[in-house]
Length: 260
Image (tube, rainbow, N blue to C red):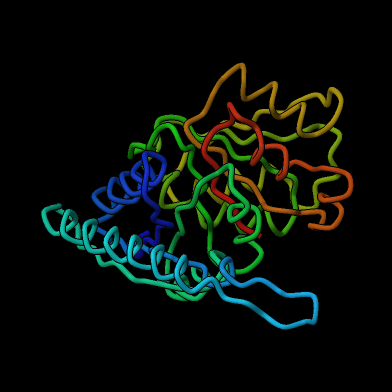
């Protein structure tokens, strides 16, 4: 993971994401690109006749603030030991990140934010959704992989190999009653071909899938949970809830590496 994109915003949470991206770049010898976005559409209102009104003064003020933030963070990064650049955008956050992510190996975003839910469906690469209150350190200590045998889980697993290869411990969690399309034993074989030793841990299902996984993670908290995003579809998750929605919203959950 040498081309690292990060959703950069002012404030402590944004700094933690930037620190995560810088730590990953140091670990891999990579490059960090920061996206500073000012979504212009937030300053456009539709009047009763179907026309549009733009709050030009408010937009100018916010653009100036974000320009100043981008310049300041660019100057700070120039003193780092990591190659970095800053890009500006003025479209909705998911569109801005997706456009910049065409050649990114991973995109770092806030976990408890709509962008973390939407971006895995908008790009082909993995999304690293981190907690607002702390950056991730690399190499990782303990990593859990949620395996259900589906294509999304397989995509997330393949994307996570560079991180798993240097992690202290890797555990593959499999819920025993899940009708896995691809057996977990083959997952262990796949990881072994990459020099990764993984523990397979079958979990008796107790309640929902997300509740079963959450209980296992609470008993042995990982630094990172690797999982497929919306393996059963985004509409179903929206209507009935789901594993992805649960771990994105959980206030005490781990950082996530997501792929669809």
